[in-house]
Length: 210
Ligand code: PRT
Ligand code: ZN
Image 1 (cartoon, rainbow, N blue to C red):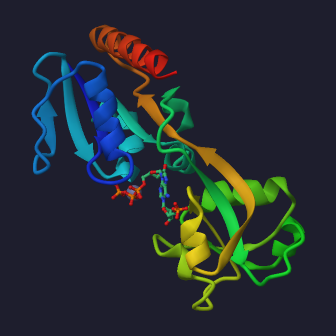
Image 2 (image 1 turned 180 degrees about the vertical axis):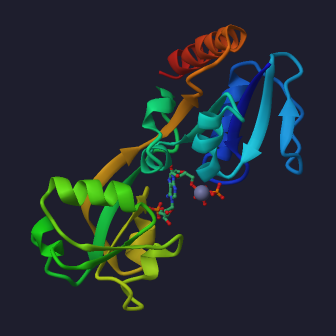
Image 3 (image 1 turned 90 degrees about the horizontal axis):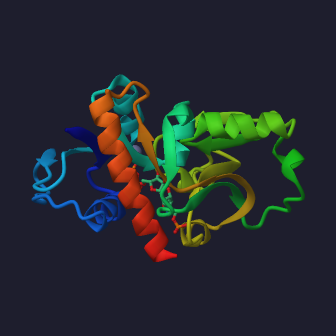
């Protein structure tokens, strides 16, 4: 039996479940349960917060998982990645108030930047030779400039409408992300064979969608 961790409820949940179903794997879907077992494939599903998934897979509590690359790389767990899944595409971007006369990244020297992704942001700023003050906050990042907490933000963007409605404009793309399948590094031979079967089916689903 292979154990997969997917997000319990959020932007990855629906497409993660859809992929598993498209692989021909059936299970009883109850939103109240934290664990379900497939009725026709040796797979058990654990429903977790997305942030906890890389750690659980690294520790072997779950064998495999589905998580956004943004969370995976921020947590320093990119070595667990097995396969990009092509959904939940988004980007981590820097944004400033729309009235700012922003020229280039050097404008951020000495500025306060609010983000939930301090490591990804720091790596980007270091690469560009910019020194800024990073304020790590866990949510509602977009309101930080309007309440005087920061001069700029670094947050996940997909359509861009959240930035617009908070009077911000996107000025730099820091990281491109999509959902990724991750796996524990020390799977037993039996589990590795189940993973191979699952990957075979995932590839078939991906081919059919092209
Ligand atoms: O509760 P849990 O911890 O499990 O979930 P969460 O709230 O931390 O994550 P969730 O469900 O919001 O996102 C899960 C993953 O989906 C993220 O880690 C990304 O990989 C991916 N993803 C894709 C997104 C978005 N698109 C997205 N638009 N994650 C967040 N957003 C947010 C963003 O933070 C901003 O507030 O949506 C807003 C921007 O959207 P637009 O369309 O207005 O630009
Ligand atoms: Zn989360």
